[in-house]
Length: 112
Image (cartoon, rainbow, N blue to C red; front, side):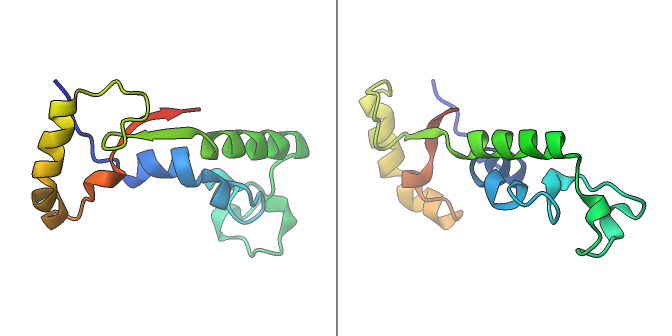
């Protein structure tokens, strides 16, 4: 049996889009801002930036998590998904599309 989990922003962003925001250590800093004014400081206030060691770790981790390998159910790159499940998913593709989900975009794995 298979379960299709529709990923939310909190799942998709950390695993696919993190470097877009996390790669900017002063502006975004993965949701953490330092300094006396925290998230309300202006962008030119460099006290919001993390310590250089923390910043370098942040860049490494956000890059690593953003550059993983992905597999898709319909493509079945590893040939580990039962063909009947793929046929069933294709058959109900219009039903999923009505809910705003393209069955071709459903991931079967994330390899980091």
